[in-house]
Length: 295
Image 1 (cartoon, rainbow, N blue to C red):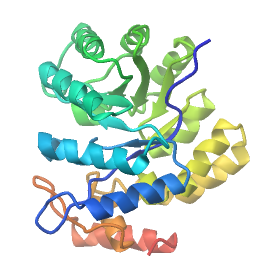
Image 2 (image 1 turned 30 degrees about the horizontal axis):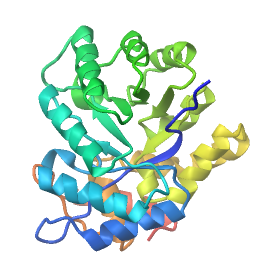
Image 3 (image 1 turned 180 degrees about the horizontal axis):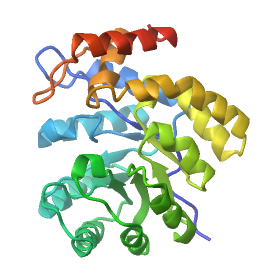
Image 4 (image 1 turned 120 degrees about the vertical axis):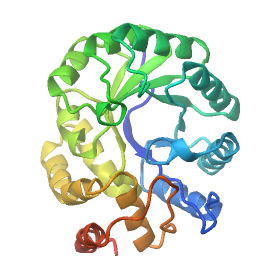
């Protein structure tokens, strides 16, 4: 039986920017090193939390190369390469492979509204264009469309489609995937608050936002759940839940970057069309972060 490739705690990395909106390389390197030292299992740059939609090809290269340099083979690096143009996804996935990424996270196409047959063909041709593993990313709240369980299971039969990041919140769908998936396929939660229940159902980990801020604690939650230590896992879930929820009090990654800035890890810089948080929600967010000892 083949082993699962991606399991445990993945971090949906923020992209730190300088005042002039260039990638803040010292902050990025420090953040990555801290997360690895804290025990995370995977790093995922250039995803939604990393403001990938606003990165140029050159910036994507700089971001991925810098993360790979710091990681130095210690954990897998899964680069976000998805968009709603299949040809562009192929191009960026091939580019990620050339840069040395260990996998490609590919969000389902948004705006185009493809059918399930179209979703299958999209992922099939992307996977066929590269040799590195592909992680499907199902996030209907962002894309406006859902990858049905039947489609995920059909895609799981393709050799290098090895996992799905499931952020649908549809536990019936997720349960069906877990029940019928191949032994070497992984189901990773795409929502921090769903990590524990998904692992309890047989899932394999989470690609997390809150792990940017509390990597050691979130890794303890995931590892405890994977080891069937549900008492500890529930304890960590309850501890982290207020911040998990606060991270979505406004659009991700606004809250997570605001907290990291208050922690002194990065500068609170976003790229349009994202703008800084409203004063009232930021005040509530930082109150929660302070209560958890982060600031």
